[in-house]
Length: 115
Length: 113
Image (tube, rainbow over all chains, first blue to last red; front, top):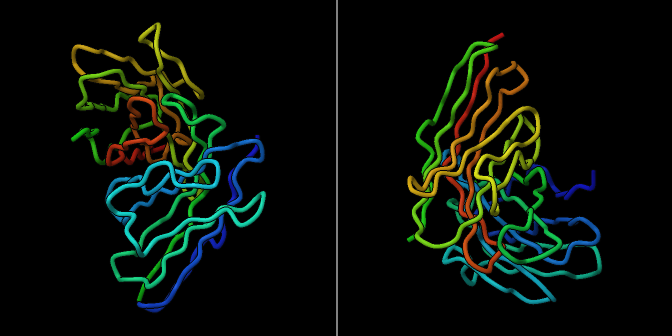
């Protein structure tokens, strides 16, 4: 079964540093997402991306965050100046369609620890 | 605001016991409902989903869920759990014309051999 792959699986970074989390969505998918899960809390939607632009974002996704599809395969999440509260598991996801009810496929997640 | 609640945070069962995990959502309009599972060290995988039609949906690995619109519920069931069902289970909803999922807080299931 095709998979969403994410790198790195775990990253430790100093507060204030920039972090880029990378994702390779399923190849024929057109809609891409980032979610995060702070330890012990719910999985939260961050942003959705389609046709090279953000289609929806949550209040969590402030100016510190950005997403990009730099080439035909990668989808990245950048956090410009990390804060302690950015420590979380970040999940990339993709789907073939963007309408509600379409199955969203998730990657294994990238653990980010900000120290 | 729309929300999803999972009543059980941590469930411990013996093998062959029956399982029911509760999920309720708060939204008055049309919803699509999902259960995802995350096995230790693995990604979130879709167990089953409900879009329309028969409110009793069957998923992978012997799981099923029933959508009860009047109760805003979508409980997950399995008649006989196995040790390999040990995982975290997430109920999720999406609304309207969006791919965004709203998740419950998750339920950790531990099955004792």
